[in-house]
Amino acid sequence: MTKLMNKIAVVTGAAQGIGAKIVERLLEDGAKVVALDINFEKLEETISNLDKSGEKVFFMKCNVIDQAEVNDVFETVYDRLGRVDILINNAGITRDAFFHKMTHEQWSTVLDVNLNSIFFTCQAVIPAMRAQEYGKIVNISSTSSWGNMGQANYSASKAGVIGLTRTLAKENGIKNITVNAIAPGQIDTEMTKDLPENIKMMAQLLTPAGRMGKPSEVASVVSFLSSDDSSYVNGECICVSGGYLMP
Ligand SMILES: NC(=O)c1ccc[n+]([C@@H]2O[C@H](COP(=O)([O-])OP(=O)(O)OC[C@H]3O[C@@H](n4cnc5c(N)ncnc54)[C@H](O)[C@@H]3O)[C@@H](O)[C@H]2O)c1
Image 1 (cartoon, helix red, strand yellow):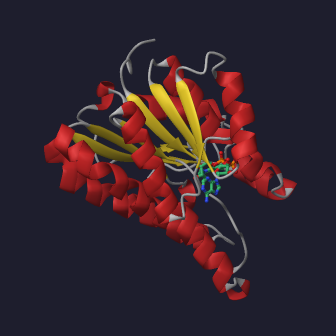
Image 2 (image 1 turned 180 degrees about the vertical axis):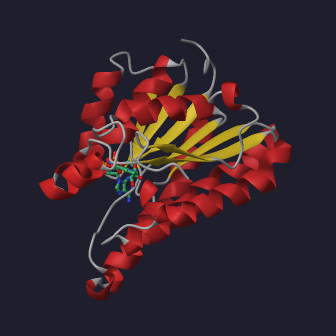
């Protein structure tokens, strides 16, 4: 496929799970992809398997909660590749606990990685996207934004992602930039593998599809929102949850 030919995409949290599948899918669509992750070893292993030529995908260590590091990484991207057309904010973590037992550290780490990081990455690309009058930003939220037991920190961060998405969509639509979010339901990755069986079973019972989602099923929606097929879709949050949530 060539719908993203000549486009430059940056994906955060790309070493595994949904992020790795997003990189794979954007490469298939013809984009050049810059893959970022805090876990450099895992990133290197994953990316070298995806692009043996080493010409279509570049990878760099980037801790998205460190603004100086984010700025350095994007400066390198602009120096080497000249532009960024697509930004996928995918890096995310959980630190689950009931609210009455949640520590401030659990609260703020999740807010930092899942929400504040998007402030840093968007600040690094939006001025240039406005100048080039082209940009596609996709933020990975979650169905937990609508509230989920044991996830006050995660729900708040992912609901914040939706508010930020809509505001950036409103501010930048006039510059031919779309900013959309995706809210995945339960997807089969490292993030969910250690959930207790009864929680997994409950989610599947409440999901019309009757199963967990696959990372590739999120990546295909990212592909749509990263392409001109979605040129008049802006400020949306698309649930990819097998029908678990129909807001
Ligand atoms: N798996 C699910 O069921 C599910 C559901 C809804 C939303 N999501 C969201 O999808 C995204 C991807 O989740 P996943 O399931 O693939 O998780 P995952 O744990 O498999 O992958 C997350 C990646 O983010 C990276 N990362 C973590 N902290 C980072 C940091 N500070 N800087 C840079 N990279 C960092 C990790 O190293 C890892 O490679 C996350 O935003 C997550 O919240 C996942």
